Length: 414
Image 1 (cartoon, rainbow, N blue to C red):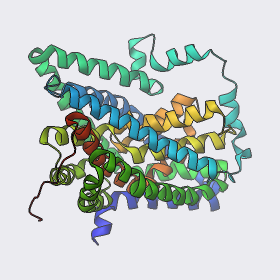
Image 2 (image 1 turned 90 degrees about the vertical axis):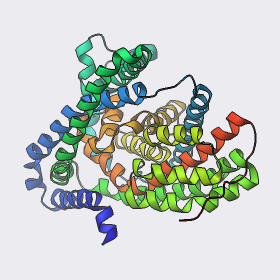
Image 3 (image 1 turned 30 degrees about the vertical axis):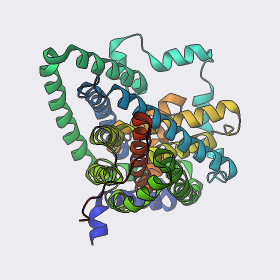
């Protein structure tokens, strides 16, 4: 019963997707009639994504007070986040080169969608980067196809608010209030996610065929295997870098409860208290652990980044793009990196990562529900990696800032 309570929303979403899959496979004519219902849900989500991104990214920067005091800590924290996320996505990319779980998918039924993508006018790499990062009109920022530009604008806006100081406090309060309202709207809308996403997934399968389902179970198995390798070996290496042999022992003595918390809640934010306690027991100073864990819960998600790699690999496979070329490697690793670093600060309820990936690589929005399944089935395992990797980052930041190893802090076991 406790398991069902903890995973109630995920189980409902999976049930909706499963029912949609059955309808799409066995009742394809009826599934095509569900498109308006699914499209209605997706359109509402798309409308809410823009203010959601703006408010969250702006507040994530604007609310960071005392940056001068923690400048060194913040610098090493961000460096550790970037390097560990890069390691995670490279590991997952190499795993997909060894075994692509989507390789047997029949891509012939995607010809019409592929034509929409491949007929685009060619541009130089420099212009592609410019068009991806910027827009020529302010209102274009609030188009879902320009999410990356909006993120950069929001970060700049947040930094400016922080630099203005007290005079910008009223504005920060307004944005905070708007953020609370948008989050409530997202919560209300996502109650209909099993029906909305299930309907559109049924339409997608009814229109594209059922063979796409074969890769999902295989992708989940591959994801779990890679996550276990990352959890046992890679995180142990990080712990050793942060604290040597004694630090590694302290890490494994204190990682059990944070892992269970992550697995039981599927929420990085819910793991903040137990992660802080774990770092305190390991011996990481308060200013470091508060900075690393608070930021990490928002912008550092190695597990989500690995899931992002799977999503890009699925996209590339569906549209017959090679995976093993240098350009493909850069795109896949970069896509997963964006999901783990940039989109980590956006709540997962809005399918924001899927929208970003589709718009970034120029794929049609019809594949978003297909990608959303990857996010759903990998969420539990990804959260464990998201949360526990913040603990090892805290250890490495402590090592980098204070240049010394440390002894475990003895706290009473509760």
